[in-house]
Image (cartoon, rainbow, N blue to C red; front, top):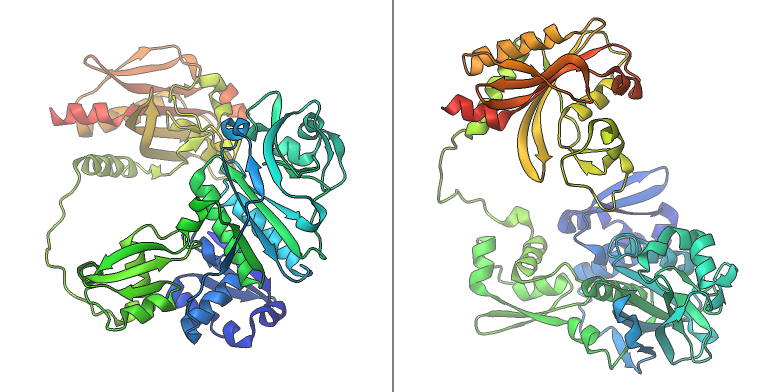
Length: 533
């Protein structure tokens, strides 16, 4: 979810009391939540409408919807191309787009566009990996500009916050360099944007130079959007270009860049049949409804020709447009109809087996728990990891691998609940990945001051007697997680179902668990095959 927030008084000043009073009504149409607390207004959006991630954009769309201020003329003017791209950068950041915004000095808009820039970096840009935006004071630099590569040992410049050094030193010592240096793949060269006097404007996607730094008095801005993903670059280009137009700036787009021009007001055809099929009806005022949602529209012989603004990056085809027709029309006005087909569901066999096992275990006072599918690599330094699925760039090191067994997650739950009264008798049924293959497992765990192998073996016998009407042998095995001689493999006929035993105290100490633990983990897919024979 994406959140935008503003002081209530400042917001009323920015968008006017008339539109402020309509925020709740518009939320019911678009689909965002609104909260007001301590004189702060907070709106929470689904990620599918990035064109509305600011109050200026919201006001513009409300003017269109409520006041009939339909988009007739293009928002942008054409301009000469200001940036030339050297072929050498194609291996690093192959996609580049740019535009100019000019108007009054930024003033209070300065902090807004910086915040908006970072919002796009984090969402569309995936923390600058797919796309990064540079914003420059056009009055302080000399076009035309060049996007190229330079040796990081010899390129020297001053960053916007007055850190001076070579590009290599900036990558090693500056906070932004340390945070994003891994996004530059070359060991020797760095991407750089230079003006005609060879002054450094920016080193994408890391940091801007001092020469082109913007401030409250900047009135003419140059935007560069560079990246590794074309769609991300194009999306950020139009989102920011429209945002600058919304706050009152004249936006000029290079005439030579056909990729950007053709995307704005792109055409999508929808038919009467498609509208009726998805909505159950076709409103008489469909053209007006589309215009209220920000589109241009004209009637064709078979339906409608719809022109989509460039910042509606969520619109991919007719279904998205028809959804907007339904929103503008009002879902509450669409009459309910009974389904033409009906049926009765039947239980999914694996779920039936799991429910039987759950019933057996709960009958002896074991409680079901759920742990995270992702786990930390640290836990597996003792037990070993065989899942073969490691998250390349995890948000947290605590969730860096997909589990290959259930008990690590349950042990983590024990650590959280170690102050609870003993004994703790818990189990989990869930999915794991072993050697790249997904399996269904059952883990049963007994934690008590004198927990022993015999306690968990009694549970195993009880479970097997009520599922396969037989017992199983336990063959001694060597496992880092089991005390030597106090557990092993669960074997039925020639099938190894899982492991059972007393957990090694060194693992329990790592989690701060003082009392012993006995556990077993069974492959339910194998047990299910035996049950079905």
